[in-house]
Length: 138
Image 1 (cartoon, rainbow, N blue to C red):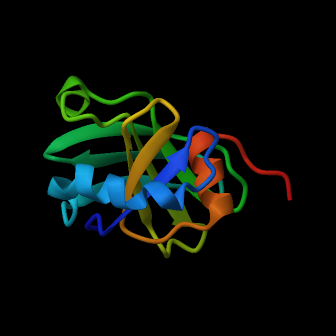
Image 2: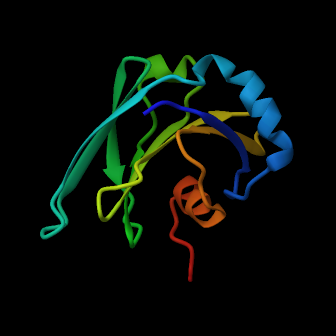
C-alpha cells in the first residue's frame, strides 16, 4: 500500500485539520511511499502477529485488542526509522480481511501535534482508538 494522505492529530487522537497542510509539506518526501504488511491471524484461536516494512526497514507489530477490527501497533521503531522521525507504525484490517490501513506517525512542530501518513481516510473514532491505543466507548 502507498501512503497517500497526511493528517494532523492532537496528542489525544483528535483531528487537527488546520495542521494537515503542515504535515503534508513536512513529510512530502514520504507521500507515495510503499508500506508492506505481513500478518498471520487465526480468528478461531485469536493468535495473531504482524509486521510492517517502511523505507526497507521491517518493524514488528503487536495486537492492540480493539474489538471489531484487527489492529496492530509497533512498540517504538527501529533506529533507522527513528532517524527519519518515525514515532509509531499502526496497521489495521477488518475482521473480513478487507480495507487494510497503514498509519505512520511522525511529530509535527510541537509536542502537541502528530502527523499521520496513511493510505486511507480514517474515521475520527478509528483514529482516536489507534493513536491513543485505547478503545473508545460506544
